[in-house]
Image (tube, rainbow, N blue to C red; front, side):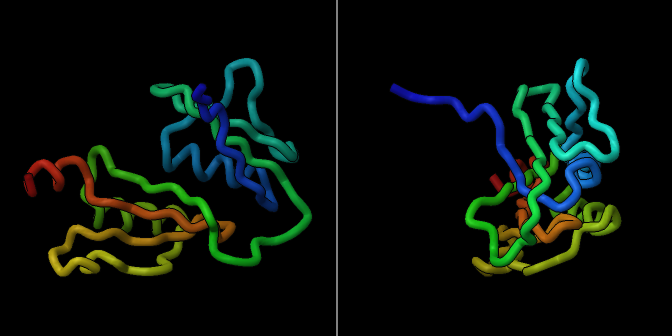
Length: 132
């Protein structure tokens, strides 16, 4: 028997602010009948294309160590480097630059969201198509 992942949940200090940030990054939206508002301690956002849900829940403790699970983002319209610069302009910070980890520039960049949750930015679709 198999199961489906219905929701990915992220513990955070400010559910509304972090959900708004990720909405801007991923193009997710609020649920039509359950909009997120400042002060909400749980904020759910949804991918209009896939139906994937991200749930941000406020918790009293702060992030202590590196994430054990993280997102790998692949830009659809921009190159990896353009996306990295865009995300930094939105408030992400660079944690590690692994673009040349294999020596051929096909690596990734590790960023952190405004609350310190790490995620990776891979090469974009157009870059992958040129390489193959």
